[in-house]
Length: 270
Image 1 (cartoon, rainbow, N blue to C red):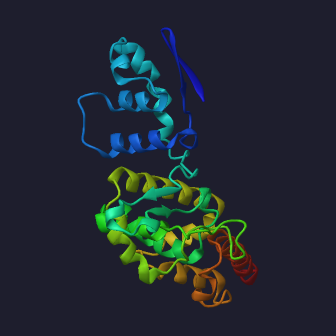
Image 2: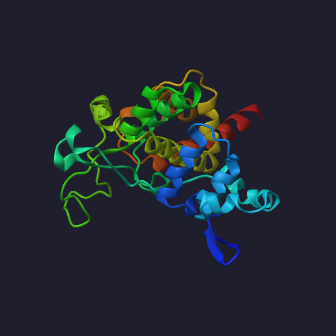
Image 3: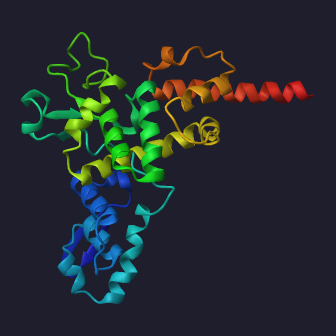
């Protein structure tokens, strides 16, 4: 965090996505994806990340404000991304769903409890939205990641496995969409932004796996199955056997297999 001094007032300014608070993230996506304003984009973002009222910033000399614009650069830097889960829960209006299901829970920071099966489907919808800006794809992404919280499930429960959500079942995703489409667009876009950041983190950790995935055109849910078979030569086993393993575990195994496969190819050519 940086300290910004404006006259007698001091503000703590976030210097990375992961230092943002939930309210700041939601306001940032409203600025980035919402209607255009006659106020400069970076000035509005500076107001959000610092907490300084926009009216106060507008009263300052324009030259001084432009000099502060670099404080917002991390929001546009592809090397910086959001991995902290700032929306661990979303609330669906009670009139749309029974009272106990009004709390819907998402994965933990950095996909720590995301299963490979839900990653396959979530990544399909993510790529569809990224390329086509389909509202339906965005709703499906949210409904894949966020599921009703199981009452009473926690560390003391004998069935606790680190996840408060109902088990992933791709056949129920469209049912969840009917309820989750009612949450604000800003929350959906914040979830999309967080997913993109976590995915970028995975791309860095497992580059060979994602390079193979990107060579597959027209992303479909089965693409990750083809990538897995391509990298492992079929030795990994049927895709459904891995669906309930943690995504990071499977991707790490795929990365090791990809490297072993490349080594074997090089040795065969000698």
